[in-house]
Length: 58
Image 1 (cartoon, rainbow, N blue to C red):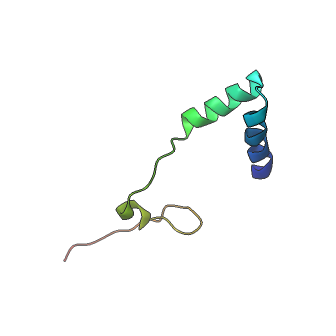
Image 2 (spheres, rainbow, N blue to C red):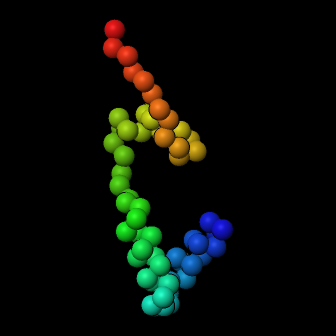
């Protein structure tokens, strides 16, 4: 399914399909794209899932 969606997004780069563009815009509006800083990267595993860390100060 992910490959299908990626292909749709790539297809839209060459074709200006209004219906597909509406879906793409909706997806982009729900999922913000931002770069993580070095402190935030510490909590992300290789699979991309956020790991929960409880840091206790001594």
